[in-house]
Length: 341
Image (tube, rainbow, N blue to C red):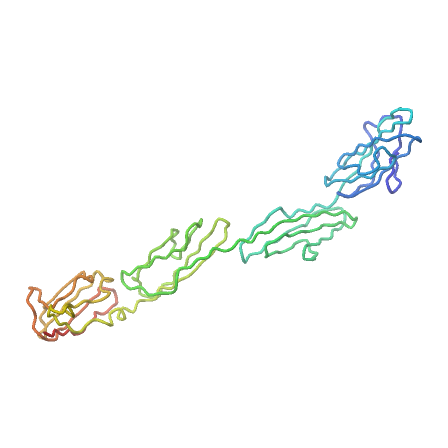
């Protein structure tokens, strides 16, 4: 008979045990248990254990078995060989190896600022106690920091199981569109949210990067972008395009022209930033209201040198100019330019 520490025995018999066997008390996975048999004096005993290892006492009438983590019914068998070499019929018993089942996964990942809920809840035939790495005892655990998370699930019968998982916290993409700024007319700005991301979403619905914007807006324009990286983490940034104060672009329009063509100074009338408004029209009038100069599509190289449209040098005087930027809702710029010879 096989006896355990609780003196449960399994009879050694000359009868075959095929088809039946004694059921021994259940044990916990990973536990160490002692089993024994009663036989003839001087006999040796050959033990075979399924789902565990004999760690002490093989060939003796008492052995110590280390059960592994495989749950289920396992067989323990013993064969007696007497001192005269007679071999008895193997006798076996069934041992149910059990414990709660802890499973929180091997690896998990979240994005910075998010949290992960680990759930160790499981079914068992006795009430369960949970113990997490922070000493909390609920069936779930919420983690935000990167590192190892572990849990021990124990039944009130003393059987328990352990599991661990590594939580990776992925950084959020860093996106920078620049400081809030002002654009006027055809002045452009390239908004670049960075490369290598799997998805881009702009406030206007665009999904491409980079994006080019210009100053043709009549109110402040708030532009945002959200990017998603390969880990599913998102980053965003916002920039405000401030409505252009057009007149600030033309606060330094020259008011004097000295076309001597000798010293190279003030020989021409040049309007800075006019190239931002390719549709602009400039008209210059004399004191009698006659149009003496007309130009469209100005750029920095298209300047007035104090001549009439026919190429005649104009006399010293004050001349009235009108600069129409051809921009919706914007009044023309007006002023005087003096020719001094």
